[in-house]
Structures are given as C-alpha cells and as structure tokens.
Length: 189
Image 1 (cartoon, rainbow, N blue to C red):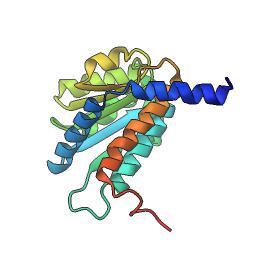
Image 2 (image 1 turned 90 degrees about the vertical axis):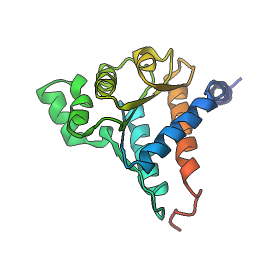
Image 3 (image 1 turned 135 degrees about the vertical axis):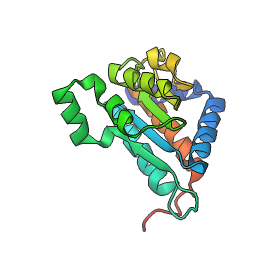
Image 4 (image 1 turned 45 degrees about the vertical axis):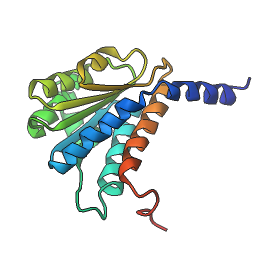
C-alpha cells in the first residue's frame, strides 16, 4: 500500500471515531451563544492555531454575513503581538489565559483545539474558563489529554498521528461552520 493511500485509509478511520452527537451539542452551544450575544473564544498551538483561526474566519464571515443574528468570535491564537509579548515577558504558558482574563465573562464559550490535549497554555486557559463559569469545548486527539477531561464537551479524534488528528479537527470545524452557512453563496466569484 502506498503512503498516500494508507494515510487516506487511516484518516477515514480517524474520522469515524468522531462522536457526531457531541458535534451536534457543540452546534447547540454555539447557537445559544450567538442568540444570547455571548463571546466565543477559540485557540490552539501550531496547526491547531491555524485551525482555530480558520474556524473563526468561517464563523465571522461565512456564518454571519447576511444574517440578522451574528456570532461574536475571536481567535486568541491570531493575536500575534499580544501572544509574543506575554511569551517573551511572562511565559508561553500564559498567552491564552491572560487574553481570557481581559475579555471572557461568565457564560461565554471557550473552545480549545489541541492534538495532545496537554499543552500547558491550553490547560491553563481551560482552568481559568472553568473558574469563571464559561462553557468549555475541546477538540482533542491522541488520548484527549488533560484538556479532554477538563472541558464540558470534548470532541475527540481518536488517533495518535498528529496530522490525522488535526485533519479531523478541521473537518469538525467545517461541520460546525457549514451548519450555519449557505454553502458557497457568500463566496466571491
């Protein structure tokens, strides 16, 4: 079996581990946040940061443009000056939690994306979000890690290959975003 074919086959297996009931619960949680004008925060490291940023873009534009009810979502992982200032002056483990301290309020939604579920900066942010009674969502891979145990709702891609876990997270984010979107109707020509 060639590598691309093997990767594709194992990716399909990883996608099959996603609990669709939990994806539906995330959609319900985000719908409620939108309807109550709650803030949604999403973040991650590395590839998970890219997924968080992509998801925020899909929700801000694709799921909000042309709609009366609009989402208030912010990707903490795209706040590069703030992140690097905290990383340099305080420590990398506070780059997300310190942003939440500025913006998050009780009943907001905090969504963390982490392949391992064990990144200290992600874990600290979820700890804080739980302390102030935010609703917490995790997209995890591998075993789910500490984050998977801490969040209110964990959507787990049960694969120990980081690439396939990240692919699964992007697919979950598209499932969620496209629930609120009109497919390609808001796309330029």
